[in-house]
Image (cartoon, rainbow, N blue to C red; front, side, top):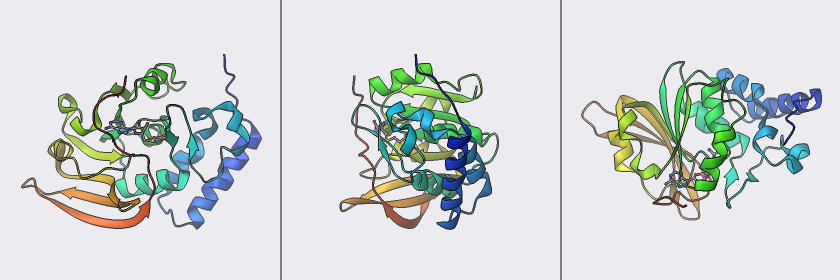
Length: 218
Ligand code: SAH
C-alpha cells in the first residue's frame, strides 16, 4: 500500500511553485489557492516525489502525462470557474486537473478513454472530500449527453478540431477551453457559445498536449 504524506517540505515546494505561476502571469487567486491546497505529488509515481513541484509535465501510466502546472493554471483561469458550476472535462489522466476544479467548488464530470487510467480513479484518495467529482470511461468526442448541458467544458488533450457534440452539450453563454492542433503544437482556444447555438473563438498561446484520440481503449 502506498503511503500518502504531505510534509512541510512538500508544502513549501508547492508554495514556491504557486509563486512561480503568479510571476508567470497567472492572476486568478482562486486558481492559485486551489493549486496550493492540492498535493500534486499524490497524483504521480512516488519515485517522482522530489521533483513533483517542478513546473513540467510528467509521465503517468499508459503513455499519458500529468499536465504541466502552468498549463493547468492557464486553462483553469480561462475557464472562470465559479462554485456550483457543472464542468465537463475530457481527459481525466492523473485526475489532477479534475481535482483542481472540484477544489474550486465545481461539480466535475470527467471522461477518460484509457481503461487502465479509468480503473485507477476507483482508488482516488480524495473521494470523500469531493463527492461532486464523477469519473466516466468513454470517448470524450461523444461527451456526456445524459448530464448535459454544462456551464463549462475543458479539454486536456490536443484536439484535431472542436468536437461538435461538445458544443451541443454547452448551455448558451457557456465557455469551452480547448487546445486545437496547429502544426506540431496546439493553440489554446476559449470558445463562448451564443444563444443561437453558434460560437465565438478567442485564441491564446501554443501548448503541447498528448493527442485527443477517438474511441475507447480497453
Ligand atoms: N487532465 C489530465 C491530463 C492528462 S493527459 C491531468 O490532469 O493529468 C490527457 C488525457 O486525455 C490522457 O489520459 C488521454 O488518455 C486522454 N484522452 C485522449 N483522448 C481522449 C478522448 N477522446 N476521450 C477521453 N479521454 C481522452
